[in-house]
Image (cartoon, rainbow, N blue to C red):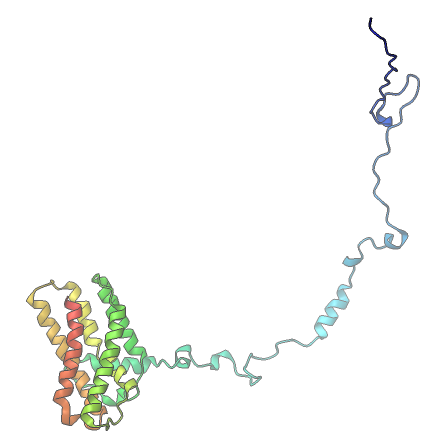
Length: 258
């Protein structure tokens, strides 16, 4: 037979907060107190925003009495020189545009001899501009020759300088390697013109070879005269100098044609 066990009664306590319980009948209900912000103390009641309080008249008086920070024109070292007295940026970099233009005009005339006195003051700004233009026209023809052109001009300058050293026996006059690079670069102007003209000439015909030969003779003539005038013993070996220059500019013309 089954055995019975005494089980104590289970009492469930309500989980509703006391203030939310339903009041007993006949008992009034008082709602919970609403949230009230803290009131300021008596010290800050007179000035609720102390960081906003300032005297406008005192600030204006102090700003008018203070001396200006930058009085007078801006200068270097307090010398009073303004930016209008500063030289142009190209002159500070050593680029003389007027001199480059005069050298270009002296070479541009095919029948007039170039002035050697203009090219006695060597620079590389003009030659770099001509070589960049030559490479740009070659790029328009579908040939990427920027590195080849710079390398060939460097090798050509070293070649001509070595030829002069061998011919003159060490007496090079005013011709040094830097001036030789400048002369070879400036005499590239006819080759730049030929590179631009070749864009409108038929490829593989005799016309482009004839035009190229004319520009090669132009560059050879100008470069030979300038090298012979700047070197002390250039007149004695003008033919050999002309042959070396002709070889240099013939390479550039073949680069344009092919």
